[in-house]
Length: 415
Ligand code: SR1
Ligand code: MG
Image (cartoon, rainbow, N blue to C red; front, side, top):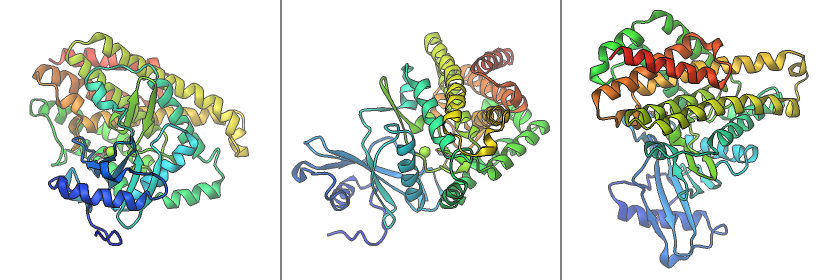
């Protein structure tokens, strides 16, 4: 009935009835031999929550089988003016398959991917919650720092030149060159928040503050320029590339990382910095309702994520390093030192771009009270500037906590 040998957009949010029929037919065809569907009770539903780029649909039956179908559209969902190669679906699927080997159980399993429909079938993780939603409800997760640090150490260290055979790594680098997605990051994160792009989303009451602190600070621009060219040229490891709380499924007892379509070879600190910044957005939200216990948990999670990353990276380095020159005494410390510097820098750029750039975060934009929203935004701007301008000073988790509290104090003084 349907022809899946030629691309068309299967998931159409404005026609859920037709979408259901198409997606059920598609799922039956693509998972034949893998999932024994109960055809009579199969359903396919478009969830209310989406990411910025793709289309998703959840398929399930009464016998507890379920799967997520994710399809890349020719346009990206957040903006009809922006395009990104539909091949991103293959890249994401392949990266998840690599990450599944390196961090077992920490990413959704990929059942299949299809380079005609630019779609994949992914493990249904709906018994988890998207972490950003949980952060908005001020839930806390005791395993988070341990899990996220394990994921980052495994996926980043094991795809770096100190471990992976150089030829294999260069082959992988070639395979995961993603010009369109990199271009989004290079512009949205590492340029537009500083040059006052038209498509920036600046909260009107904070406009003059943003103009002074971000658009008008030449010394800051120079450091961000260095971070931008480091991102573009330092193919250090295979990153997730968009490791924010909306890319994490979480439960009290487990964590799974998904949505790695921005995966690319770039500096490890970009992923680590993203985690830190997004936990600061959660902290901002906690502050807006005076939820001290939640704010304290966010700060502890930031501290522990950084410290556990350093500890596990240091220990694992000795176990897995293969490159003889990377065993030269002092090199490991130099290498980790440079990762930590990058981490601070990219935590800063993520803080800024989510506050004033095109893609904001609901943790901050949902704060209704003007003064509290300004407080949140100014914490992000001050902390981000501190991270970027003093990258060498952020060597442990407590350095971040102190800087966040200092930024809060400075932000309060402006109001
Ligand atoms: C144009 S896409 C905007 C943002 O959404 C994604 O999650 C990435 O963070 C990207 O920068
Ligand atoms: Mg995403």
